[in-house]
Image 1 (cartoon, rainbow, N blue to C red):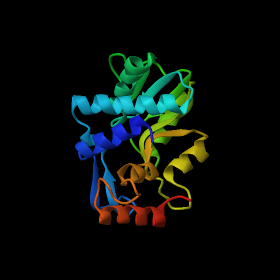
Image 2: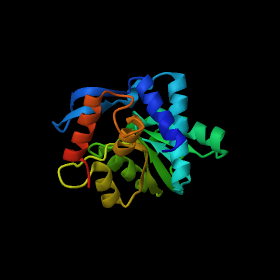
Image 3: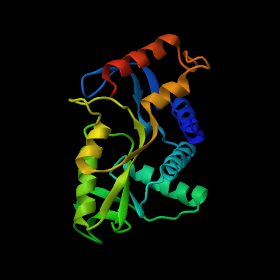
Image 4: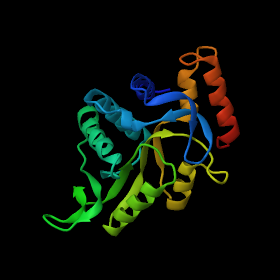
Length: 219
């Protein structure tokens, strides 16, 4: 496990962005954990999160020319990631985000920030139904640019309606590589004690996580 992944887990736990219990997901499944990136809502948390995204992107070796954040959650994420790439990795890249509705006055248009060009890396929190990805890919391609991949905070590694996860479906449908700060498997590893038992969570919570992955996780 990399330092940036441990840092991400520490941050998610300290801000209760990662919670354990019984949560009903949009899919109707009952999950033993829930992740809410909206709870990284202070300056220190956002700066740390940006560092984690930047480190994961650099570690992946994925090539890109600029960053794009889908409205609305992706807007602070893409800004924080761009700052961290510049301050921690010496790479200053352009970034942009979209409006939900195109502006018909002033400068107009739907894109705010740098114009979409070259290889565009999408920065978002998680992939559920893939709606934000589809919209982002359409915007990028309409501008004559090329989607380079997607950077995520957490990959739940959970099957959708079929045998593939939402991330796998996006990778297959669009030919895009998804880079995640952390996966469910990595989360379990980070939370486990030195002997593989529950460490930072209760034994019952760890058992529930493992049972959920066994039942709904991808092969």
